[in-house]
Length: 239
Image (cartoon, rainbow, N blue to C red; front, side, top):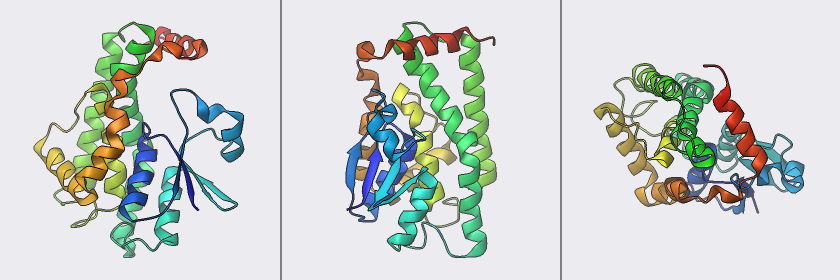
């Protein structure tokens, strides 16, 4: 059976998990605990030397990178065409967003989670206000670009139907919710979020994000001291 190596704290893992579950793709969930550093274990490095999640194992075939995995699942299991439309221009819109989102959405959303929750929780110190404000500006700018460039006046990124682009965008924008920071403050973005969530199914969407929204309850006392040292070094970097 298909194996997916995942931790649903990771937005790319949530995208793969939701897509597989939504489309009835049978798979074996292999949990790799990011908080315990299991992605650096010898066993996992044999699966993915990049030490990243998610990973897919299909028999002897192994694949990393969430976008590549989503494309693979689309093709192998003949997913409904709205996920990755065959029309040249419509598919290009999906490709365009997926190429941009790594730096345009993923980085600022992850940074917000670290600054608002993980760094203070691990170090016991608040992040300097300047770093927090700069990150808030990056997040706001990314969301503005998303609305104006990618969503525009459409129901979804490609038009009237959900695609891989919407799925990936939404799970990435949910990342700050782990720190109880809501980025869906504009009516346009909030309405788009509701449409995507309903298209996925609210139950599945909630299940996929349960580990993230409970992140504040995490006991970090057992964290490897070297990780704490690296975070402290980050805080001491020049602004």
